[in-house]
Length: 187
Image 1 (cartoon, rainbow, N blue to C red):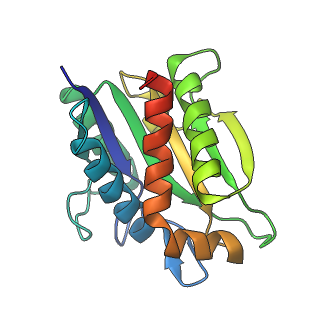
Image 2: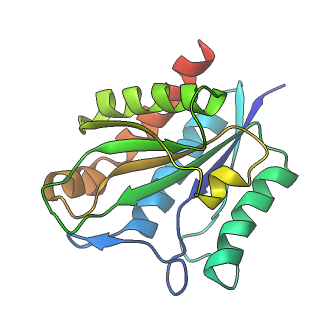
Image 3: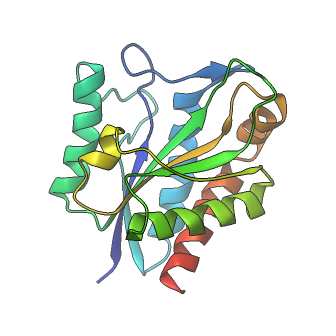
């Protein structure tokens, strides 16, 4: 029985729940493409089956910020997925802030251990700064999913080096997340 991975490409292409922007990049475009690459890697590995929250770059989920988040969680819960991976890009008013981090609902959980593996492998694959695994119980997609869930902040769109990496190495970010899953499962 393959392991079911739900990949949530953070944010909608426009309007409500649109993502951050920086250095000519839009978060929703980067997360869409990294998710597609990750799904391809997983679906070409017989040990996994992956589904995406957004199957086309123009797909809008929900009718508001809240219903957009709820739609993503409902898709994962009703499948049901074994693991939930939400892909995001960060932004900060200070352009020097950079690096990757992974958010989880709480420490000492399967999600926390998965997050550690994913972060280690993303940093190794693409060379971003390791900002650590962080606990944030207020994030809806981490709070409301019924399976271990992680939210991966790939890098900062507002940092020129991270932005170049997010533009030019989207397959590398997907490979890092995939390698993290392999490492977590001991494959």
